[in-house]
Length: 195
Image 1 (cartoon, one colour):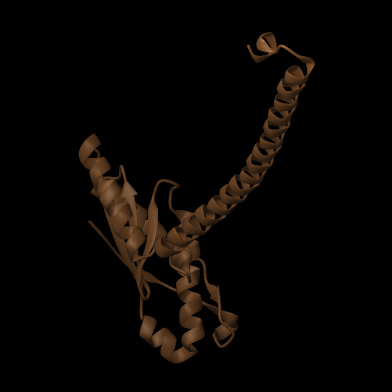
Image 2 (image 1 turned 135 degrees about the vertical axis):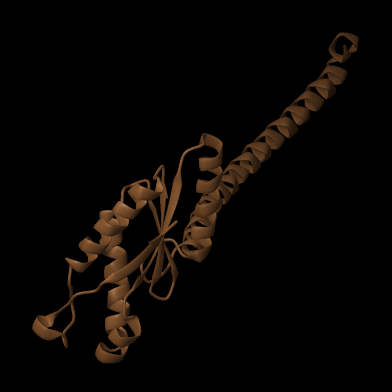
């Protein structure tokens, strides 16, 4: 409209100067916007990496909160959550659920005779043997000290007792190495109760 209304070259020159100035301003603003968007993209990517790192740390911390540091099986908190989950599932499906509680026989005597390190080794040994013996769907947790709990989903009482007997035999048949023990081996036995 300003071009068509211009009555002289001078007025037309002023219009063209204004168009050129506005074009330069638009280009400068576009470059600024592009730079801002690029910088923002870099910040977003950095934030996404940081969020991923923090999520990984949170997952790891959450895992540590639910697992026993010594044996790497569930701890008491993890066990409570697993019991709640399995009881709810058993109620929902109407299926059986058994629980076995086991502890190392004469643990105090073992500690007194062979030392604290042997007691710790016995707890780790027991957790390892049990973990290798139970089914994948069974849940092992350290209840405290030398006591462990095993959740046995879809297992009736008689079958849970048979599993407990097999586990006792397996543990007794897998001696652990203890330097001060006769022949460098020590047989650990456990008592198991089932409900």
